Amino acid sequence: MRASTEEGEYNDKMGILTNPNTDDTNRLVKLLQGKGGAFGLVCYLAGIVWLIFLANADYNLGTYFSENALLPGLVVENFDGAYYAEEFTKELFQLDTDYNGKIPPHEFEAFFHRLGLVETELQNYTITDLISKRKEDEGTGTNVFAVLRAKRAAGTESIVFNAPYFPKNKQISRRNLAGIGIMFALADYFRHQVYWAKDIVFLISEAHLGSLAWVKGHQEIMEDWSSSVFRFDNVHTKAGNIQASVNFIMEATDVCSLQSKFHGINGQLPNLDLVNLLNKFIVLDHEKRPDWPEADVKKLFSFMQMQSTGTPSGSHGFFLKYGIESVTLVGKTSKNCKARNPVSYSDIGRILEATFRSLNNLLERLHQSFFFYLKTTPNRFISIGLYFPPIALILFPIALKAATIWLSKQGLNTTRGLFTLMGLHAHAIFLRWVLNNLNWILLPFLTTAIPGAEIRTNVFASICGGLLLTILSFSIFLHWNVEKEIREAIYCFCLLELATGLYCLALFNPSLVVFIGVVVSPLVTFLFFWDMPEKQRYWAKALLLSIFVGVAYDWLGLDGLIYFVNKYYYESEVYGNFLFELGWIGGGVLILGVFIGGLI
Image 1 (cartoon, helix red, strand yellow):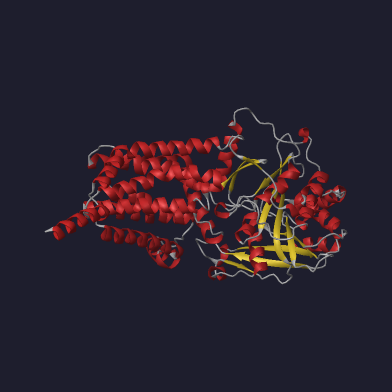
Image 2: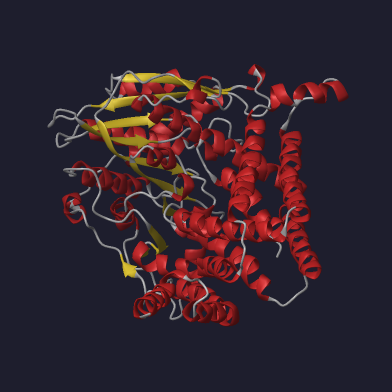
C-alpha cells in the first residue's frame, strides 16, 4: 500500500509538468483571455509613442566616424576647375542640340580621350518589356566609362564616380549634362594628382538601369533570367576591387542646395560612415532646430516612407545590392534658385574632391559603423538598438493573440490546419508563376475571344487583380467548408507566420514593418476580442476590407493602381524588390487568411 501511495504522489507531482489543465496553466489562460486585449493595446500604443519620441534629439544619437582611416578633417580641397566645368557643360548642351536630345556614346568617349584617359570602353545593354515580351518593345542603352589608374599603388582597389545620363528626359536641364560636365572637370583635375592609391572609374551610365548593367557586367554576375529579360555585355576593362561608389546628379545648371540620397533596394542602406562623410562636407553648420521636434518627426516619417517602398532613390541602390557601399549627391533646384545664391561649381567640385580623397585613405572596406539605422537629420540617427524595441512592441499583440488561441482552444486540428495553410501558400505561388508565363498560358484564350488582343499594362494589372481575387475566394471557401477547429488552427498559424515574418522583415526593412504593423496589428488582434456573434464579426471584417479597397482606390485611382502594380512587378523582376512578392503571397495569403479564412 505504501508503494502505491508513493507512486500516486509521484504521478501527481509529474502531472504539474505534463498536464495542460493544471491550475497554473488555467490561470495563465484566464489572464490572457481577460487582460490580453488591454495588455496588447498598451504595448501597441507604447511602441508608437516610443518610436515618435526617438525622433527627438534628446533620445537619438549624434553622428560620428567609426572608421578613423577616412580622416575627413585632414582633407584639403584644391579644386579650381570651375571654369572648365562650365565650358564642358556648354559643349554638352551644344551636342545635345545637334543630336536632338540623344548624345551618342562615342562623343562621351571622345571627351575622355581629350582628357588623357585612354582606357575607355562602351557597354551595351538591352531590356525586354516584361509584360508584352515582344522584340519590338525592347529598350537599349550604352554605358561609357574610363579608368584612371592609381599612381602610388598596384590598383587592387578602386572607387567609382558615376554621373548618369538621361537622354529620354523631356527637360534638357534634367538630363544631367551639368553633372557630367563637372565629372569631366574633376577627371582632368584628378589625372594630374599623384596621391591616388586606388583606381578611379569615371562612369556615364545611360539612365539608372545602366548602372545596374555596368555593375553586373563588371562583377560578371549572370542570372538565369538575364538571357531573356535583361541582357548586357561583360566589362573587359576591369578596375580594382570596388570599395565605394559616389553618384552625382544635377537637376539643373544652377542648383540651390545639395542633398545626399542613400536608400537602396528593399530598404538596404550603406555604411553610415559613408553617409556621414558626404554630409560632413555638405552641411557646414549645425542645423537650427525647433524646441519641439515636429520637424524631426516629419523627416523621420519621410525617411521611413522612402525606405518602406523598397525602391532605390538613385543609381547607388544597384551598387548596394552587390555589396558596394554607395551614395548619391544630388544638386537640388527651385524656381527662385538664382535669387538664393546658387551653389557654385567650385563648391561642388571641392565637396566631391574631399569625398574621393577621404575614400582614397581607406585601408579596408567600410565595416565598423552601422548598416541598420534610421535618419532624422544629417547630424542625427537612430540605431537598430533603439528602434527595434518599439517595433517589437507594435507587433507583440499579433504573437500574443496567437498564444491566447493556442492555450485556450481545445481540440485544435493542427495537422489539417497546417496542411490547409500550406495549400493556400502553394495556390498563391502557382498564381505568381502564372504571371511570369501569361504569354503562353492566357494569351491564346484572349486572342480567341478578342482577335488581335495583347497583354498590355492595363490588362496585366486587371489579371493581377483577378488572380488575387481567387486567393480571396479560396479563403472564403475554407471558411464555409471546413470545421471550426480547422479554421481556428488556420487562424492561429496565420498569426504566428505573420508575426514571425514581420519580425524577420524588420531586420531588412524596419520602416515597412512599422507601417504594416501600425495598420495590421490592431485589425487582426483587437478586433477579435469583441464579444460579437460569428456572422456579425464576418460582416464587420468584410466591411473593413471594403473600406480598405475603397480608400486605396480613392487614393490612387484606377490609373494609379495600374501604375502601382506594373511598377512593382517590374522592380520585382529586374531590381529584386520583394514588395510585390510580399503583397502577393504575404498579403494575399496571410492577411486575407486572417480576415476571411480565420473567422472564429
